[in-house]
Length: 253
Length: 319
Ligand SMILES: Cc1cc2nc3c(=O)[nH]c(=O)nc-3n(C[C@H](O)[C@H](O)[C@H](O)COP(=O)(O)OP(=O)(O)OC[C@H]3O[C@@H](n4cnc5c(N)ncnc54)[C@H](O)[C@@H]3O)c2cc1C
Image (cartoon, rainbow over all chains, first blue to last red; front, side, top):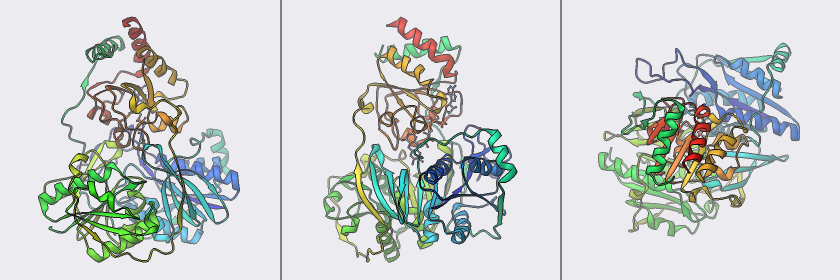
């Protein structure tokens, strides 16, 4: 089975996010980018599937700082082919990225495309369903676990409250991964170093981006909060005393 | 703008999902400011009865056996034909397992822009989306002439989308629903063997800040001293550190205890969806900008690993 996994980087939410002087986008000068966590799960799910049924795993992403490290780490986990899209993605949107990925995937003709169900900075749709439509393939998202047969996958789709729907999807298909069956595996840096000397990243130039279908942001801001939490400062002992006071006030202690 | 706003009603196994009412409430607010009618769009099979509780000016109903259960192929075909035929001003979907499967595909299919994660509309008809785990809001004009929206809960009250007077139902034309590539095999019920965190009056809830499985013990000890249960955020469950039955949020349980003690939880919208009805939220998070502080009553940026042992000891003494 040939499995393609398009992934993308997103701002690391652990860092403080600031708005750029234009007021319509994040300030990227200090922004640290990391892999979209659901894409990380998609890579893991692809490798688990390859281990079970055989085949190849292709990981593809647009260039970004740290992209090569992620691609090599994927190879160390078991990915067979690494692709980096090159071009000016600075003003890109999901519609444009999905179109560029669709062009690539039309050539690669994978049986299955796995991608993260969402990214926290998605604004104009999500990559998976956009890609499915551009490729004329079915899409099912919120997937946590699947089994594959020759021309079909059986997926576990999550609904609210823990309800699961088992669905059969004809291949080729695109799936939006919510969680892999196992947490993304860890690879030692020594192993990545080893892979770096043999694996190669294929470059593919994206000549022009088609942004149509996207949206325009006129203002970006931090949420305006009506009532923020009352903060408890001091040493751990002092904070513990305050917490206990609250418990007592509420009659739970 | 004075054009109708369509709300795609989400339902599963004969039950309307709460987000449907939130969307209707949002649509109503918008039409009050900018005109137009709120039309509920109901797709199903023998599902007319579901329309009774919808606060809408009208219901557009498509009945077809292929729509008996949610199916992204069938839903997209039916909605694409309806949108083309009626050119609504907006079509609102839930930012959910149903809505997210179809909104982006329809955007690509019909060449209509889609706005993700809209939480509210402004009085002058702009969308306000919540992104970056709740840390950032993005505002803009609703694309014209038609726009698709996925809506997150939190901006409108679901009661305001409910009604006891049923709206007039119109049967919409049904396109041929052929070439469906997806089939529902079966539903698998949630595990009920564990205690139900939705019924607990106090919860100690752990997030990714707990770092590893062994550290869960620190939360267990605190919960034991307090005589309450432990719940968790999604990453903790996905890592296998806690069972799925303890998951709070969009894909887990909605809880409303008297006290929700959030340890190392950032307050992402998908988590908040499941616990914002708690009476008092106390958050322990080293990041002073964590969105959890926007909904917590009390907070502290003290490191939980410094706080937990001390707190557990003091509670034992206080007992
Ligand atoms: C479709 C979908 C459905 C989802 N459903 C759910 C759901 O049902 N429930 C859910 O929870 N999530 C859900 N998520 C995931 C959600 O988007 C977030 O990724 C998740 O809630 C983050 O969990 P967290 O707060 O534990 O982790 P993080 O966001 O990583 O936050 C960890 C926090 O711990 C703090 N911290 C770190 N170390 C310490 C320390 N020593 N002391 C104190 N604080 C510390 C950090 O400052 C940080 O704020 C869903 C996502 C999607 C896409």
